[in-house]
Each structure stands twice: as structure tokens, then as C-alpha cells.
Length: 149
Image (cartoon, rainbow, N blue to C red):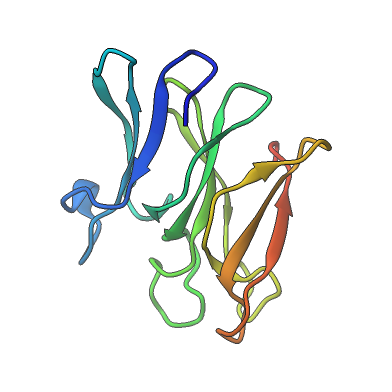
């Protein structure tokens, strides 16, 4: 996606075991200038997310928001801390804040493994979907405020 500054921002799901993610690549957030200069803004370490696979959205505050399909600080009930997914905020300079780790309560109503990007509603909140609910069946629709923890 093209940011308000004219640069292009995106994610990768593979990053050669960066920062010690066990067993699978972690993913990155990158910036490309219109002249083609590539900068990796952030490499996901696992606990703050793993495998970003959706388009970023730039919020009205100028920061970028996205989801990771895996990672986070909770384990979705199967013992693996790399299973649930996260919602994150990243500044144009590359500072990441994890806003939410899915599966805080398992089983729980929040779902896990977000499947797509976020959209910002006219109310300022972000909306998205997960691939699964607490029973590993249908997904969920969620809302999060940009100021969430």
C-alpha cells in the first residue's frame, strides 16, 4: 500500500528464521521508496507476531496497522505460543506495538489466526476477521480501538 508520505509499505511472510523464530520464518514489514530503495522496518520475532500475510492499512494517526496469522503471547490451547496471531501497530520509522494477542482465554470468543487485513471505520476503530473460533470452526469478526493496550 502507498503511504501518505509517498512510499510503499508491505509485509513478507518469510524471513529466514530471523530473531530465532523456531521452525518457520517470521516475516517482516518493509518500505520501498518510489525510486526503489528497500528498507526492512521490522522483523517479527514470534512473540510479537509471526507470519504477517495481509495488507497494511494506514490509520488516520499516520501509523500502519496489520495482523499476523501466528505468534503472540497466548497458545490457543495447543501448547504452542506461535499459534494464535496478533494485531499490531507500526510507526513509519519501524517501532512496533502489539495491540492484541488472540486467544487470551482459551476457549474464548475472540477467535484466532486473523485471515485478512484491517479496515478503519469512520468511528476510528479497526475491524477484521479471524479464520477460526474457539472450536476451530467458523471464524470471528472483531473490532479494536487504535489505543488498545
